[in-house]
Length: 395
Image (cartoon, rainbow, N blue to C red; front, side, top):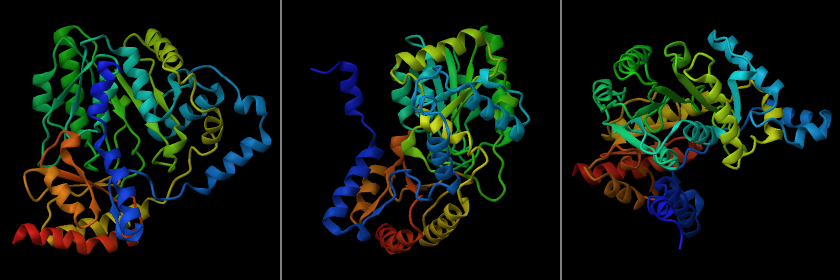
């Protein structure tokens, strides 16, 4: 018999992954060209050529023992130094290799930091809608995820409710901008107000509240929008980053944590994150990918491909009568479902071979997420189905 804790995790297993598996089944039944799977945020844009060149350079030119061997749990020192200096160049920070811990993607990084920070019963606050796996990541270490209700006007965080929900047990607040599932970028004004609330509550309760910034979509932005770099606004900020989306490498599981020297209890926290990397079974981030990304710190995917998809899908759906805040980043649309029950609406879409994810999976009922990191032609083929679906509800 499996553990009671895992029984609960299995019971609440990701609806996104379930929909992805359903898409494969439907493709076998109807033919892949007739199934429109918008369920999974799996990048459709190819990695830049720099990645392939970097991999070959590492394999052919670097010491094989270095490339494939163990290293410090934090990762290769020279790689971490290059990453720190790259961040400094881009955002005017002052990090070095001691502030960087290489991780097994952003998910691995979040688990490392929660393992390092949380005691049983500690609270982590997040803003709906949010990436559903946050519940599992916090629950892994017997923490409690506290959810702030969504601001469905513009999907900026509901800061007045945040202020009410912070308690002595609040250990961290986690934010994700550009956001999954809305594509909204949190404005500088939002970040300034958020930081002011956290400073005020730290002083009120005489505690430390860490701000964890989950940033796998940082480079995927449109129309010249800028994403604030949070360590410049709040002292106790920890950044989790991944190249899964920025270089289209989701399966390679490579990312990093930034833990600034200014954060409270830095020495213990950086030591704990090192140990957590080891005892969680990661041991270290993948060695080959560490070496390779060090050569790709200025490489970029072609974001215009996603922008083209965004414009087609957003403008078309609005013309059919759907409601949606236009995303500023990432590759998701978060549409208002055409009935109150978002799961029923997702089932109705499936009748047209369209797979979308109910907003309740992200803590926001009455909406559905559409991942537009797909072929442009697939969107074109899917539009008649979206139009028919809307007509069914507008009769």
